[in-house]
Length: 436
Image (cartoon, rainbow, N blue to C red; front, side, top):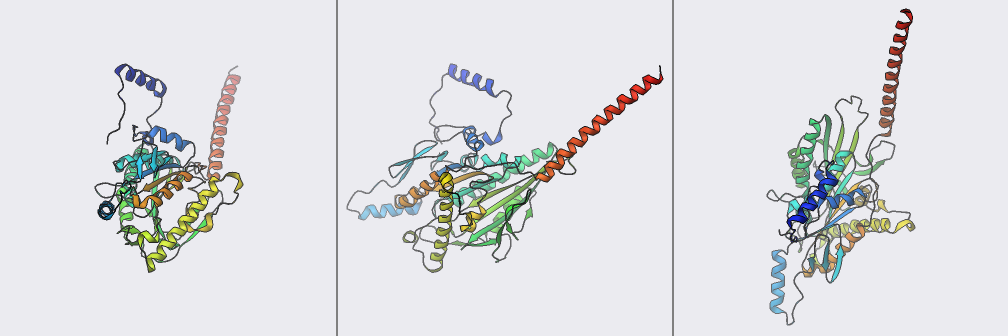
């Protein structure tokens, strides 16, 4: 896609290159911040600064009009006695701003309908990858109304892979490099869904409603799903094979807005452990988890024409998303709100660390440009604007007991070295004494 960058003269370009070289000559390239910037694409460097401030990174993607939406408008124009409003309610102005129904919104990054899957991944999923390998928790979640393109953005297709397959491929590339540098890295994967407020393991044909528990002891597991199966992953292919197989068990249904509507929230979690190869006691062990979440879309009954079971599913989806909105409102109202209602739904309980807690978090808000969805699109954009105000408190995950043991081990080694030096000095003194 065209970047719309203004022309830079040769002298000015040389000056800018020299300035960059002066300030960055001692810095190793940061793969997280490798994406270049232009008018409609923010640079990875600028987005990494936002991540470093512990803010939730909020990016918005506007999809193209669907064939059905174009046909619906054509049909309306054929019978309408008055001129209809423009067919698109959203216009992306630049890499950070857009206009929806006459109101301007600003986010950390905006993508128009021409943006590729790679351009979106490089400025969303990739931004958390380096942090996760350093030992921080991470979360990337897609939000938006039903049919707005969340599953396409997160999963994609074989020809146009989304955030999850691209992230997994790059993750294991970096893991391979770390292993060559003398690191041991283990990756495990889990996948579950929240359907009608029941939590199910998608990796097995198991209909049990699993419970969310919390291990708050120092070095404990934190918030976890009790009984959720965990699988060792040796490469990206093994992760994606599990995700593909598990996705076949996900609740999918047809509505008037989406022929393949996701009726549940799907959560892929990668657990990563790393330590130095010569650290036999694993004193320097770092643990992190990365949630990759495709939320079910908010929906209105008058738009979906849902009935019976579909209507019940829609009500459960909207209820959990309302709970999510309440959590975000509580987190952004400042010190006046001491209680954050994480326990009001399984979704918010699972996201407790990711929103206002120990995590590096990216929100991918997907929006439909169709005029008939203007009300729901505006609501999603307002939700994203509130999320942008959340501040997390990310920290490297180390077991404090192991950290203390490592400190004592290092202190012991220093004392041993000191004793050896003193013994050598005493031996030298004795040698000189007897030679007198």
